[in-house]
Image (tube, rainbow, N blue to C red; front, side, top):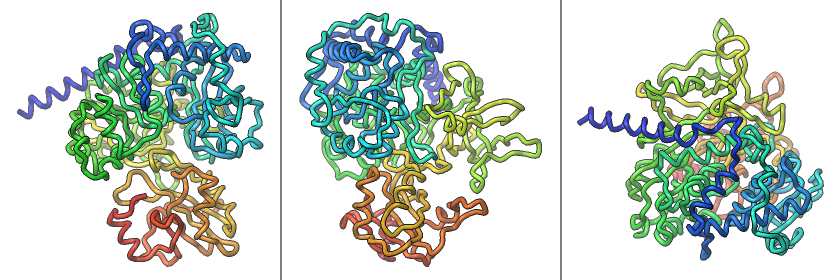
Length: 595
C-alpha cells in the first residue's frame, strides 16, 4: 500500500509540473501577446459567461470587456499613452478589475496601492510610480485629503462615487464600449512593464515591485493546472485586490479560464462559508491568517454544506492545517511559496501538512537556480566559508533561500522602481566569482523527501495579519509620538496566531500617555502595523555602529516574569494600551487573547 501511495504522489507531482509547464512554456521576454490579448481571447470565447459575482450583481465577460473598453477610451482621451502609469487606490469591486484591464489595453502601467495606506506612505506609492492619474473610490476620500500636501507628482484624482476628485462614472459613460485599436499596445513585449505591486521592505516605505507582462501572465496561469480550473468553476476571492495572491493569482485562474470570480468587498469570517454556499463556490483563495480566523469561528452548519473542492494560497501554518482541512471538509489544498518580485517559488501539490512545496529528485534540474545557504541570525547575512563563498545548508538545516539570476522567465528579477532597493536584494559571489543571486529574505529548510518548509522572515520586515510590516516605518512614526524619544520595532510570536505581532522597545523624553497612544498611532499607521506590545527601556540597546540590537529583544519577547522593564500591551476589550500583568501574560501564552 505504501508503494502505491508513493507512486500516486509522484504521479500527481509530475502531472502538476507538466500542467504548469503547458500553461507557461510560451511565456518569455519576447512574447508579443500581452495580458490584454489573453483576456480578450477569453472574452470572445465566453462572452455570456458570468465573469464576476459581487454582492447582488453579476457581470458577464462581455460586460466586463465593455467596461474595460470605456476605461481605455477615457484614458486615451485624457492623454495617457503606453508606458504612462496610473495609481489605482480602491477597495474591492468589479470596477477595480475593469480599470486595470482597460488600462492594459493601451499599455498603461497600473500601480495597485494598498487601500489601507495614509499620509506619507500613500504619497510615496503614488510618487514612486510617477503616476499621471489617481483612480479611487468613495472609501478613500479622507486618505487622499490627508496625503494631498505630501504628493509630489501632478496627478489629478478621478473617483467612482467619491467627493474627492472628478467624477469617473460620468466620464466613462461618455466614451464608447468598443475596443481601442490594438496599435496602442502592439509594440509591447513580455519584458515590458505591466503592473506595480507594492511590498514592504527595510527602507521604511513600500517598494514598487515591477511586474512585466511575462511575470504577470505566469502568476495568473500557474495555479490553473494544479487546481484543474475550468469554465465551470467559481473562484472565491475575499483577499484585497492589491494583494498578489488574491488580486493576481486568484483573479487570473478565473478570468483566464472563463470561470466565475466570486468577489467580496472585504473578508468576513462569519460570512465566508455562507458566501461559499450561496454562490456555489468550488475554489477558494486563502492566506494563512484567513484560515486561522475561520478555525476560530463557532461551528456553523454552512461550513460543511459547501461545494469547495480545492483551495490555494500561502502562509497556512502547520498547527491549524489539519484542523482546517478536516473541520471544513476541504478535499485538497495547494499551498505555495513565492514573492511578488522574486525568482523563487515552490508549490505543494500533494497536501503534505506544513510544506510550502517540494523538490523531488527527478525535478532538481528545474530548481537548479534555487539554493539554501547557511545564515547568521546575528549578522543577518549568509555565512561564508574560508574561500569566501556561501555554504549550502544541510538537509534539515534552516537557511536563507536564494535564487540565481538569469534571463529567462523563471530566473529574471525585475527589481523595484528604486535602484538602491533592487541592489540590496542581490547577493554576489555566492558560489563562484561574479554570480548573482536574489535574496528572498526567508529562512527555510528541506527534508530528505525534498519537502520545503518555511521557517521565518529575516531582516527588518515581519508578517502580521497577512501583511508585511516594515519596522523602520513603524519606528519612524512611533518616535514622533508625544513623550517617546526612540523606538526599536521588531516582531514577536504569539501562541495561536500566524506571523509575528509588532513590539517596540522605547525610551522616553517625558510622560507617555498610554491611554491615548493607540488612537494616536491608529491615525498614522494601518491597523496591522501598530505594535501590540511596548517595552519601556532606560537606554536603547545599540551596536558599536549605533544600530539597534534586536536579537535579544526578540528572544525575550513580552515575558513579564523575566523582564524587569515595564511592558504595555494593547487590550482589545478596552481598545487601548494597559500594563501587562502576570495574569494577562498567562492568557496571552495560552492563546486566549484574540487581536
